[in-house]
Image (cartoon, rainbow, N blue to C red; front, side, top):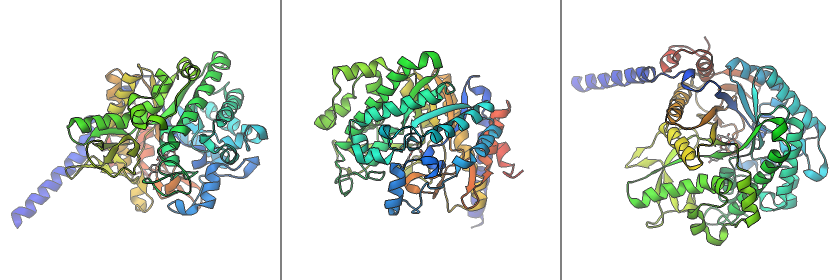
Length: 516
Ligand SMILES: O=C(/C=C/c1ccc(O)cc1)O[C@@H]1O[C@H](CO)[C@@H](O)[C@H](O)[C@H]1O
């Protein structure tokens, strides 16, 4: 008994010592990244702005969805107020300035600019808001990194065209992007057309969790939809909307405004479940359905072979003119949102339940191999902490898309809202997550990857889509009753990392209280 107890204590001591010392030995410096590197934080309009009816803003698809189908959101809440950023943006710009970031990634609310789409006219109050925000950022030396579309579209376009399923939405997006280039492009150096269309179309049209809730069996029982066809029809319209916007920017704005334009893709890393040829190919296939789906058309003019073979007539085809439009208007950079990795199991040669995110790729994704989990779980179901995947994702994109500049446009760690206040504020796990993911990012850069920046998701807790406010991603905690923003330990760690050239590691942070 005594021996067992002593062994247990010894094990605990060793584990604690490793936990404290390991990050110190690995150390991370601002200087590990190139001098012009962008370090920032990210948000999106619907998740933080609130003011959903202010100043002539039109309703968007998420306004309508969260009001009519509140039961589909974990806590039944919505973005009516969110972080009230629309009224508190100056405080939020101060927070960014105090953190020491040199860039801020945010999105523009389409329904604020064009409340009813192209035919309803431009809302000057919406333009004025983003002018105030952009000017406030520039005054503090913070580069705006602007997303044109982060999941929210004017509700009228959903009803009039069936959202992204209708080809007519391409002209709507082209017009909207033109209004934005024209209004803000003199001061915006970094544009992206879409945020994670590879994720949003799957949540909208395969799983039916995002508006307009389209799905079909075996993925779910929605009142309408076709999970095998619609996501690809929507993606096709998004790709052609993207190409039209890039073409317009490159033809009419880039030379005089001097900015660059890209697209943001969600990149989960897939590790083969076993070393069998089947699982190795499954991991590769899952990645093709994740990344190549959007980036192959943009770089090479067509969808990847794996998708054409499996989806056959459900995958739309590009006309020769469309292929030319895509290839003649390559992006200047690729945005990668990276959070996690998961094992991929083949479902061509062995039976699986195929009703999940990867189902159409004939892949089943699973967090465990031989009972052992791939990384620590986070508050988001299916999202694990796997820092080394950051390097793999970056090398994959860098190699396949010919050394095009990459920005990590999102990376971050989530906590459950039911976590104790003490642990929410002293968010050691988030510090370690950022430290370790940045470490592997710097390793990719050392191996030759062309990476231009990193954005933490997110600056403040916000409306996390179907999770409502039950999942927290902020470097700053937000009290949603008072709108008070409180810096977490991670905010102080990020500031120290950005503002000092000395080694920043878990050791300093662990011995310091977030409120010191
Ligand atoms: O939006 C998503 C992910 C959504 C999801 C995941 C799992 C589910 O089960 C349902 C939805 O990706 C990004 O990651 C962030 C942190 O999630 C979001 O807050 C950002 O808006 C988005 O760009």
